[in-house]
Length: 299
Image 1 (cartoon, rainbow, N blue to C red):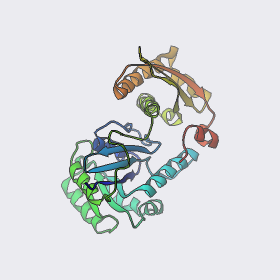
Image 2: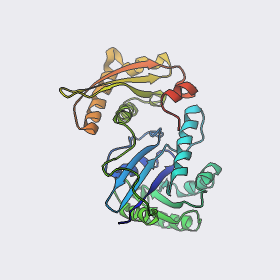
Image 3: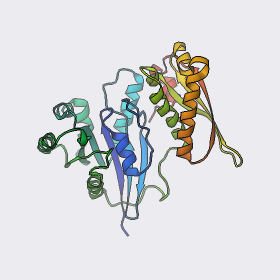
Image 4: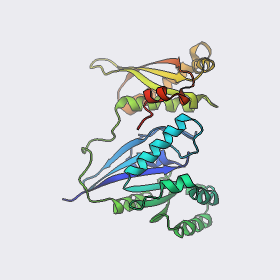
């Protein structure tokens, strides 16, 4: 039996709902989701495997004008993921269609969607926050632009029209053997997602600049036959003044973080863990080439 298989890259500006869409299509909470922009920092690969097809989704960081080295690295993840794609999904929101149409004309975005051999789908997300007249006008505008094969309105959060999107993706998939074994969901190890779950809780619990100045890496991950798995994680901040903010008065904030992160990790791994957190200062790590390489911001 012939199968279809291919790579589908989802791109768009920060906070348009790329990670929500990825998770909904996969039926798994693979990408972390918060209300803050720039939540996704790396390319997240998720495999949707069925008998007749295999779709490899690539969730990517939001497209922005980079202001420092970390943001340049995030853009590199986007560019590399676009090159790999058989089908490119460019995602916008229905909130301000005129602005979205304008942004597609920007050089950095036009460059990303310029590959002629790719099939391209424009997805208008969050249509539950707009009205029918606006959506109809938007569909006509974008369909006339000739940049995309299809324009599909959805609400990822409400699961609206995702079947239509999935059918369109399958229509454009090339005939190809499956790339991954049937039971493989992603190409990242468990400890990558453990670090992401901790960072997700930092984004939720802390405010202002702190979450963006933080990186998380797993120092130890010991699976135990008897008792809870042991995880030791390091929270990296950029300045000494940020360390007491993470810790909180008498360690209250990091205790709250630890409890929330442990619960999230246990839900993801489906087993109990013992989580130990510590805080370390790496001065200006977001602008430090060596530090970024150590934290995996290379492709």
